[in-house]
Structures are given as structure tokens and as C-alpha cells.
Length: 240
Image (cartoon, rainbow, N blue to C red; front, side, top):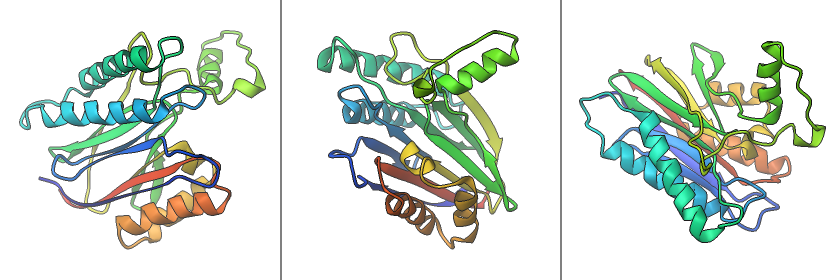
């Protein structure tokens, strides 16, 4: 099994009355990630909790020696969030982001829906492992195909995919090889909206352990105003 060190940290921030972020943190299953209840909808915390519970259960229930089917696990979790939304908010539903990684056989299996983010630091270089599923990014993709797309500036950050959609969202999947020294961070947009890419890279690079990484990222986001819940999960690979 890959040998790693991991940590997680969350703060409600300075504005919100409830922390609707949730963490996937299971060192025995080597499962790490974040989920963030969608703003503007009721039941954000419940949506995020249902998401992490279902994904965690799906991963723990999967055979250790077989291929991990994260697409199916996320699809089943989405169905559960939809069902919960019918009970809690039948008119609007509920929603959550999901960015999760599971270490298997010396590789990181990654699944992503929404605008939480994952980063890797390899040999001093910062890599973006996810792309926000936002109106702005969707417009960029469609324009690259030659389509004419307009959107309101006020809607540029609105999500185009999330957990809790009636139709199962298209899940971004990645499969990455791991090497000793690799560092990974998962965080909600309460961190990434307040902490620059340079700061993220610097914090990931200089920290001695993952506890320092997550605390510095979250505390910096709060120091800079903390307008949203801020959550981070990190791990460092020691041996593969």
C-alpha cells in the first residue's frame, strides 16, 4: 500500500452561519476530498453530507483488488442526493460539489463535479487537476468549438454541474501515477477564491507536513475576509 501522510481542516469563515462544507477523509481506505453545499439552494450541508457518506460507502464497499469504478459510485451518490432533495426541498432540490481522490495500486483515482478544486505539487511544479464546471468555462469550451455563446457577467461563476441534478452529471475522471514526494490538495471555493495560485504553490512547497498545508490555506482564506466556509484536505506521498 502507498505510504502517505494526510490531514484535513475546515473553518466556518466570518460570514456564514453554518458550515456546509464536508470532508472525505478515510486514511484506511486512502480516500480524500471535499464537498461543498451549493449556495442559493436549501439543504447545502445535508447535500454535502449525503454526498460524502455515499461516496465513502461506495469506495469502502468496492473490492480492493479490482478496478475502482468511481463513475458508478458518484452516479449512485447523485441518485441519493436527488432522493434526499425530494424530501427536503421538493421544489428546488439540493446540491453539492464533489472533488475526491482515492489511492489505489500506486495511483490516484480522481472524480470531480462542480467548482471545488484539486492540485498536485510534483517536483516543485503546481498542476491543476480539475476545472470548474461553471457557466464561464462552459462558454469557453463551446466557443472553442465555434459556437456563439453569451452569458450574464453575474452568472459567470454559476455551476453547470453538481451532485443532486435530476440527470446524472458528467463526471470528470483522472488516473494519475504517484511518486514519493508528491503533494496533493483538495479545497472548496472558500479557499480558492481568497488564496492565489502562487500562495497555494508556496504553502504546499514549504510545509513540513500536511497539517501545516491545510491549516495555512484555510487560515489565510479566513484572514483575507472569510466570506465563505473554507475547507482543505491534503496528503503527501512518502513511498509507493
